[in-house]
Image (cartoon, rainbow, N blue to C red):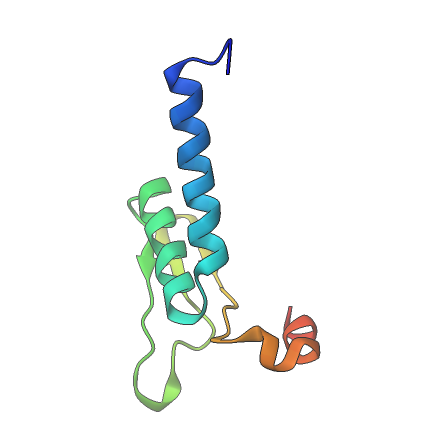
Length: 89
């Protein structure tokens, strides 16, 4: 590991931890991870939680002042029906 500074090592560890979080998250956990990232990126981000039988109407969050809306596809278990997951994307 010659030539690497502690900052390089810390960055590499943080990057690997982030990748692991993304790969291990599905369903609601992935949507929550997405929202945490968006809050960090833009404090004006507002997460939309499903409500009753109407759900979130395919709007998982938005930045009102910019008119930007986000939709996240995160099935609980995409491996159950891979073709349906691919078609939804």
